[in-house]
Amino acid sequence: MKATRKRLPGWRREALRATLWFVPAVLIVIAVVVFIITFSLDVGAYNHHFQLPFWLNVGNANAGRDILIAIAAAIITTVGVVFSITILALTLASQQMGPRMMRNFVRDRGNQVTLGVFVATFVYSVLALGSISSYPHPNFTPHLCVAVSEVLLLVDVVVLIYFINHIASSIQLPEVIASIARDLEIAIESEYPALEDRRPLTAREEVGRQQSPDDLLTVIQQRGGAVLAAKSGYLQFVGYAKLTKIAQLLDATIRLDFRPGHFIVAGYPIAKVFPQGAAQQVERALGKAHITGPHRTLMQDPLFAIDQLVEIAIRALSPAVNDTFTALTCLDWLSAGLSQISKRELSVNVFRDEEGRIRLIGAGWSYERIVNRAHDKIRQAAVGMPAVLIRLLDNISVVAISTVSSSQRDVLVRQAQMVMKNAEESVRDENDLADVRIRFDRAYASLRPHGDDYGGVTR
Image (cartoon, rainbow, N blue to C red; front, side, top):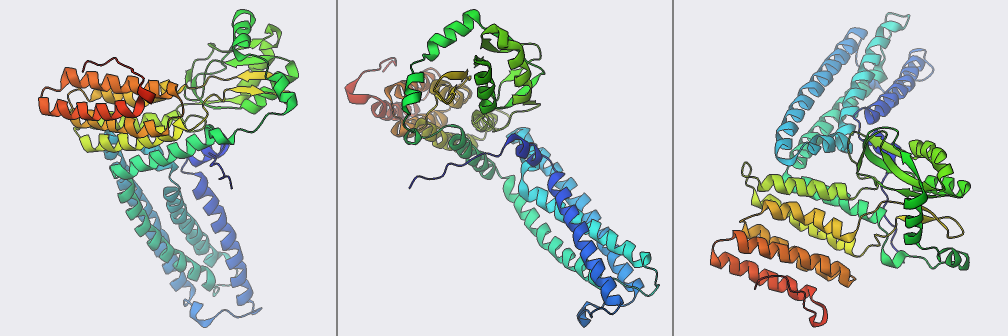
């Protein structure tokens, strides 16, 4: 049975997730609803419509008021102190792991729920406190509301212990790196279909498939009309399905020059459309189908996670940090991601209508560029570091097992050759250099199909 592909959330859901207000706001609404229900029950019990259990009795109104004041004051103080210290710790940690650490903290669902539970308890306690004096009879005490506030206080203690443990774990480098790698895995499964998932074409689509994307690209380049960007920012989301339908209605073909993750500038050409007469309508559609923002996201941009791992690795290799083991950990997870990508279909940037006619040609990534993004900067930062160069070659051997074509192996061979050249130029100790050569020979053998000679390295 075919496994279900993982999916990333839509851009609206992702925008809500990247905030600290949405989950707390939902929990506050729930707290208000719970207060209305419990207060109504208290009023019913006071009017002798039914009787509350004896163990819910908290005494007179003054005793209930003192309890609620203590709970509200303790909760709001705890929230302020704990989150202030947490943000300080994250700021210090982000100096080693990069500024994206703060964004991961904001996106973390556990952190959002923790803040929401504390704030919801505070709101509930304040509402319950106000209800003591709001009822006409001076002897009225909302026993159930006070009891619920006490239960929420106990819940807050449990959540606080969880939060401290969660933060202590989440700022550890191996956990941060593994979390980014999990995001990369989900993004790859979402954006790049497995080769075996390709469905057979219908007869109608086969006729449409006779169109050549290369021929269309030539026509669009020579005779197409330019489409300008509406605003500046990082491209976060492209509505490919929506653009395909619009192009079909206009009987046009659109070529996108930018993909999610690129920075676009307002007024700069970001697409071309053929025929030219459809350019203005497509420009209006792009303004709605393109979502831009101040930063990159994983939506339609798996390379963002690769860049995060590379950033942590090159920070670790800098003379100021000099943390080789962190860089090696990043390389291990990068090899896992590249092995997954090697089994995927990357050429999915051509979108067709129901009849198989090409309506949209997106800007995609090639396997070569992905592999280069994962290796080049780390290799350049690892000059004179045999341990890192050896791990690079070992990981190339691992990725080679998952390759499905000679073109993929050619890309990996080129990387192995550059690593070996780096070692020969920067590693001075002959024993270290011999270890690097052994790893290169192993990688070279795994990448050389049927005795073909790639050459290119001084042996």
